[in-house]
Structure formats: C-alpha cells, structure tokens
Amino acid sequence: MFNLLPKDTVFFDLFEKIAGHVVTAAKQMQRLAQEFPRIEGAIQLIRNEEHAADELAHTALDRLDRTFITPFDREDIHALIGELDDIVDEIDALCKRIPLFHVKSMMPQFIKQTEVLLSATQAVERAVKQLRKTRKLSELSEMLIEVHRLESVGDDNHHAAMSELFSGSTDTLDVIKWKEILDYIENAIDGCEDVGNTLERIVLKNG
Image (tube, rainbow, N blue to C red; front, top):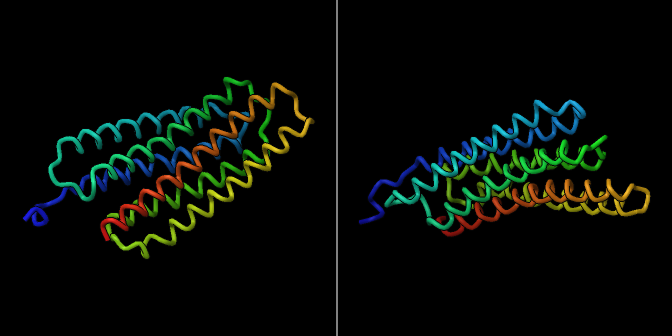
C-alpha cells in the first residue's frame, strides 16, 4: 500500500542543485590557483557557492522532516545532503586561508590537487544526476570507480606534497601554512569519495 503512494521527487532536484554548487566551487578553486595572485573574484564566488549550498541543504533537511514518503531511506538522504554540503564547506574554508596566511606563491602540487578535486566533483555530479534515473549499481559504477580512482590520485599527490614540504628546504612558517591548506583540499577530495560511498549504499539498498 505504502509503495503505491507518490514519493517526493523534489529531493533529486535538491541533490543535483547542491552537486552543481560543489562543481562550481571546485572550478573557482582551480581558477584561484591558476590565476594567483588575482584571487579576490574567485574567493567571493566560492563564498557565494557556499552560502547557496547551505541554503539548499537547509531546505532539503526541512523537507525531509516534513515528507512522509521519501525516495529512499531518510538517513541516506541526510548523509548525502550533508556530505555534498561538506565538500563546499571545505573549499570555502580553504580559500579563506590563502589571504589569511599571506600566501606568496602557489605550490605546483596544490595546483595539481585543484585539478583532481574538480574532476572528482564532476564525477560526483554525474553520479548524483544518474541517481534520479536508476537504482542499478552497474549504471553508476563508471562514475563511482572514477571518484575512487581520483581519491587515490589525490592521496598520492598529498603524500608527495607533504614529503617535499617536510624535506627541510621550506621555511618553517610556510610548512605550517601549506600543511593546513593541503589538508583542506585533501579533505574535499576525500569528501567526494564519501559521497560516492553513500550513493553506492543507496543503490545497493534500493536496487
């Protein structure tokens, strides 16, 4: 009987809109790194994306609280919303550190990580859009495998950057600054994998 009741498909709109803000924030992060030291425009746009994603997340959670029939388990909806929003939050926190720490130049490894982050968010967005159409893991597997691959690439880049940072050739203050910055972008990339894991769990439970 309950299965015959209509489910609220607006959640899919909200997932996709938040995922769009995730990708746009990652694009601006890459732009910031590539156009440094011209960073003011990118920072402002990232902050705008963070505010917009937050508003959508609040809207989605409020709707979750008021909706009787949901597309899939409430805890999975809650997790997906939170994890998507967390990625934008990490990017926003990261971009604020660049002027706060008076960064003088970009580490090449960091620029490389912004490329990995953008690719990972784009794969996440594709997977989120596919969720509306299917509950078959096989139809999301290409995107999810790509997210996992990029997370592994991000790990390797992070380890290499940390190794160089602590090699003794970098000023101590710069080590402190860049360790935190690199950790933030690593967290954002890891966040993409978290979303991928949640999407995988959703389709396995509902396929």
